[in-house]
Length: 315
Ligand code: C5P
Image (cartoon, rainbow, N blue to C red; front, side, top):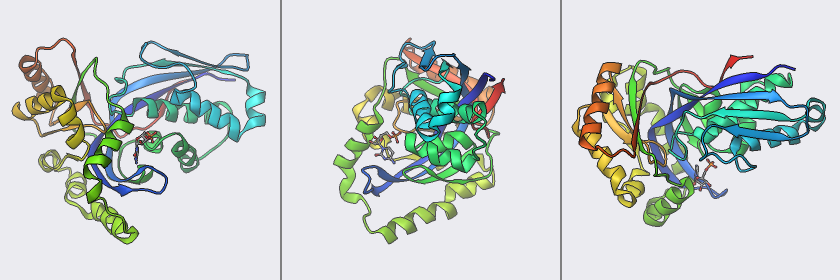
């Protein structure tokens, strides 16, 4: 049986709007998700035992059953018990490049890679939509991570409509190494503070959700109008995270002042990104923000937008 190494890209949110509550306890969202080239490498190797064993070069990553990569194995074992017993245990090695608990779907993309890898290893022949249905059981962002690119995500974030690929722009990411934000905390706090503005009527939710398809940001993406894409970035969760974490607000302001296409916090944060026209502009933005905030705890990544989801790197 072959071993597989998969590339598992991170994502940023070009748009995140919270519409209301859902009966399942999650929030109804309208998002535009975008893959970036910053990616983890996930190796799956049969280990000849009955156990799942996780290895990772970043000590912040849990190696137990709470890890989405581990949960993905359990999900496939439950779904295909006989095949799972025939093939036996798997060693999963995560080469972590994506910052952890950062709003970049680092855990979700690892779970997505394990689903894709097991589909190949066990020769299951599942299609991308079938894998995405399983992926939704692991987390709201996991289906997107499988296919990647640029997509409108609605519902909990698991219903996807791909838009034209937007892979020409560059992005600077910045995150304080010691700072992480819990996604559940961000959504719960948003609900406490802004729950009175939620839309409850299902027809209103539908019409709000469909508006994004004809909205200004999708139009800008379709026309590759980078100036307007930069201007139209939006994230409702900034309202709670920036006020609770002043260094993140300061970082956001620093990016705004140095001249990029646009800047925004990704997902539930605390990563802040700046969209740029070129690698040269991105490197310059990074240098200027580093000068404005010379804190050694602040880390930067320069990367490109990408059209790729989970891909086999080698086998
Ligand atoms: O789906 P995932 O496990 O990634 O979500 C993490 C947490 O984020 C959930 O437990 C929930 O508190 C919050 N969330 C939400 N509505 C969504 C997605 C996430 O409230 N659509």
